[in-house]
Image (tube, rainbow, N blue to C red; front, side, top):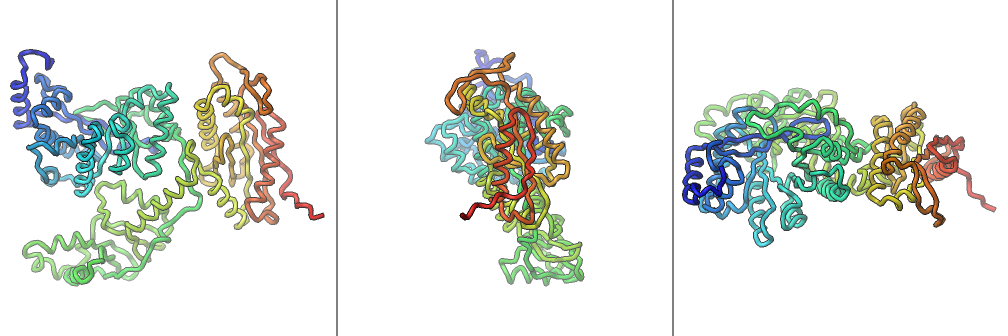
Length: 593
């Protein structure tokens, strides 16, 4: 039915809206949001439909009438209630994304605390809710967005900025709100596989999100080509009809087609120097499992800085007692009489985490942050060979991970997200110091500048990205290092013994891909060489120069760089797709006469 139908005047529609709200005649449908790498469902966005026989069946009509009638807050509360109830009833995994219009804060029907009442009734924790705020208001109403974001984050909810790029303020809103998630507007996603301009915009958004530590979700993906393009660009989270349409009974598992795209993403910087829990472990007061609860409560009340106490029998860690959890129990009526003399082992937090001292900090961070049930105020226990060593503070863990992200962002290439010169030099110096045998390979595209001049920077970037994917696919990620040191120059540091076969595979794959870089049915093109002469060029080729440094003579990356520059020069002199292995293992000594 159409709202233009004269039968449905404004009064009739308002009456219909009140009926739908009062009797909760609203149906939530859920659309999955997925993690692209290691594909899995991380949550669902709830969308609302009215009854099929109602003029307010479609959400656009429903919310338009609510805004005109100043019933937006009442409608959103009703939508929130039915969505949470249905989400809990279906036992859907992950997070629930709910839409919220900041302008409803000005609605006379707005009432604080409603969401917590709903969550308590249906058994959902605040950590599982994400409120999507739409940046669609003029600049003079941005204060509403800021107020809404602050309001929800203070209550422990996550916040997403919806339709990024579609509103009035764009980057300003993003910078001021600092949301947990940003959802890239579907305008930039539609046809992105055919539009280099859209790819540049999305690449910039991903880069900003990565550097700020925010999660970016590409929404509105409708085709396999769009999804494949976004995967190769390094998008971390995705949503759209191609993955699944909104449904009353949404899928719990991903379509099999999605799994085929896994592993195609551009690998972000991977630091070869693993930072472990050992960096942040600290000593702590501890108790045995038979200590009575009253003693531990007194410890917490005597020291307001004490957030958790580990329970250890001998040197075997059993778990953590949380200040917030046990004091909450003892704040209840008759709690002292009921619990004071009970052993503290009965109060160990079910959220206790015990990790080995050698565990990567990033792994612990994922363990804590990706579990929506995890209470970030509960610190974790650190063990060494299953024996108690100390505790790790969540705040110290998050600070260390943030510092590492900033360091990574500072030293990674903005196009490929691969490490640049600084981490490359650090890794080579590390191998030299510990006298670990390795081979360094310099990969350089022949005649890349004429190609770039002829077809433009966007085409050149696509070539660089394709080469980065080939290199990452052909190395052993456990022992090899891929660095992007600028332009079309890549350096590989091989720890794997079969490096020659890997280089041969790189050349074969690049040769197969190179014909796709030229326009259809073209095998050559005219451009200007480095001497300014106009000439014909064919398909791009790759030169790889390799060297195995003498570990007894080479002490720093500077000496290795000298050897590598000579090997690269010799490889390019040979022309074509070719691998040159230098026999020289020591740089020439400078003459002193």
